[in-house]
Image 1 (cartoon, rainbow, N blue to C red):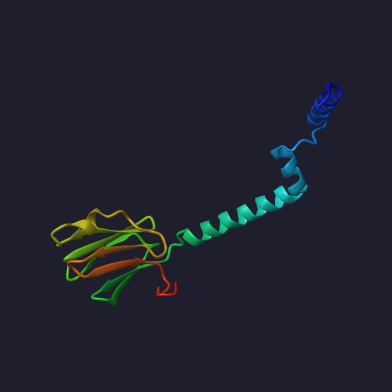
Image 2 (cartoon, one colour):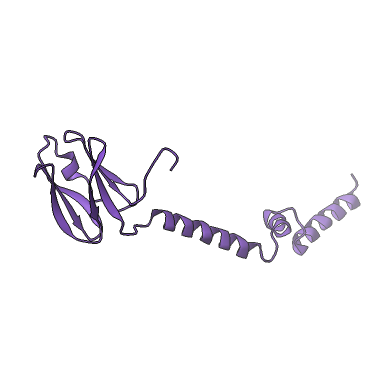
Length: 144
């Protein structure tokens, strides 16, 4: 390659950088995204965030207590109080829209030490007493 050809190729390369027609990532993105694409992406992200929020929010439903697989008790999460079940062998508390186990006669006390629950579909289980406390007012089956 002659000296004159080398100089012209270097000049063409530097001119391309100055005018912004290089092959950088920014130039490629400018070709892909249009003016309103950022707004559309923001709206989609906001809609996804709202749908997740609505899916997991607590709506002050009820706590359903199953003993041996049968629904025995139903407590509203809107009314605070303590309720004895199983002839006083277990006490369930409701405060501030959350349900928890106050006292139980089981040996390990795992149900007593579990965190208060308020989300739709969450549950507290006491295996020795065969008690399951499910939060929510809709039936849960294999599909949902």
